[in-house]
Length: 201
Image 1 (cartoon, rainbow, N blue to C red):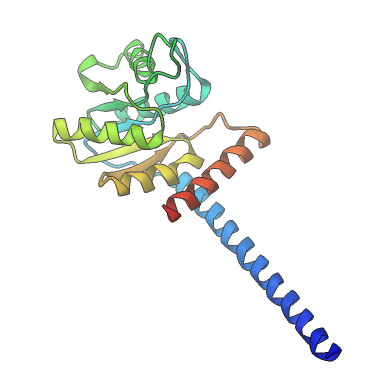
Image 2 (tube, rainbow, N blue to C red; image 1 turned 90 degrees about the horizontal axis):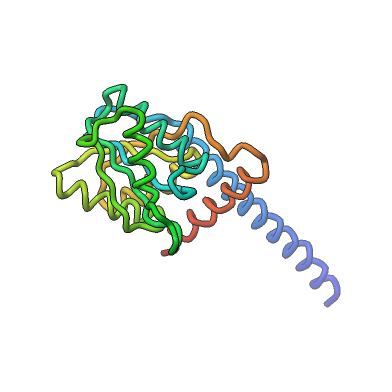
């Protein structure tokens, strides 16, 4: 009896270690994929450039949002698309401007013509950003877009776009404000969580 029990224990321990190794390999694979998608620039001719919303402080974009806006403007000026779609609603009940309005004001100050800018002010998260952007696309008969966001956010943005039937190319900001280890690590963990949540949804 004791000999039988001793044979079972190593076997159980071995399978536990194998499971942990497989789990670690899976997580590392997901992380590598998130990084790979974020570092790949797919910018090509499109109907519009969608800049995903981020925090704004009254009339001023947060550093993260400013990087997204600036990259969107660079793509527009390079001639990749004739339209910019800024997304993002009101960050709080007392906010004077929505995120997209802040982005529009920034773009106008940078010399972008008003008729090259579309905005929506209803969304509160990434999925809603894309739902509202798709509504604007359908109104204008737009089909192919470039999505602009941060590198670690791009994999989820493109995954959600596919789910909504949006033909999307990714172009991450070449610089990101998530520079410190603490903010980058937290953002990465969040994206790993959303990957699995979406997978199980």
